[in-house]
Image (cartoon, rainbow, N blue to C red; front, side, top):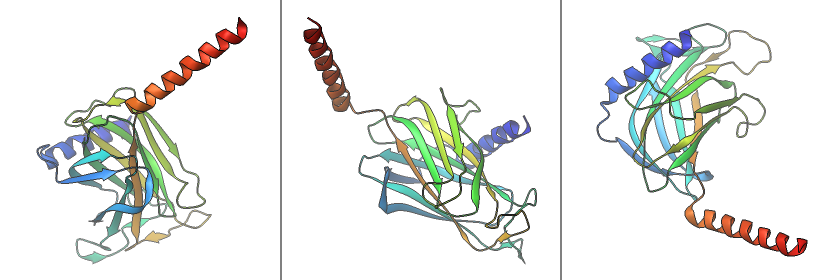
Length: 228
């Protein structure tokens, strides 16, 4: 319950911070790796939220994923110290608040994120309609913290009812630094970079739906002839 109220507060902070006016960035992204759309950010506080301004994101089937590099400044109020410390409540988490407007001409049904940094895991996440504390309709959040390789492990997947082009959303997610060691200790993440890969997925395009319907119709016709 406390976490839920915290997420709502973070959402309101995001609204005040961004003003929800014009998009600061505009990207075309998709599920393909390679030449990624890249955003480099820096933060300087432990356990705090980092708010990104409104960004317009359009989906493309052949688009690259959105690669975010979060690099700590290594200091807090001028004092040199690690930004994230394993196993220390209040100093081992970072909350990222992203404000996104769906661009292009294709609605979304999913949003996916995966760490490219070993030792990081997802703690909690949600999506609101921007400017509100109402979660998007049909929202289901799947967190899979698995370890192993840094591409397919530690996934954060959002599934929701269709979000139309022009819809503005606020994604709030908290990540935790668990360290690279097997045992819990006080391992620190100082000036290292936290890498996150992000991309939306969409409902099948009309042409695809038509092909599926045609295939289903032909299958039914063949089945009726076979039973005749």
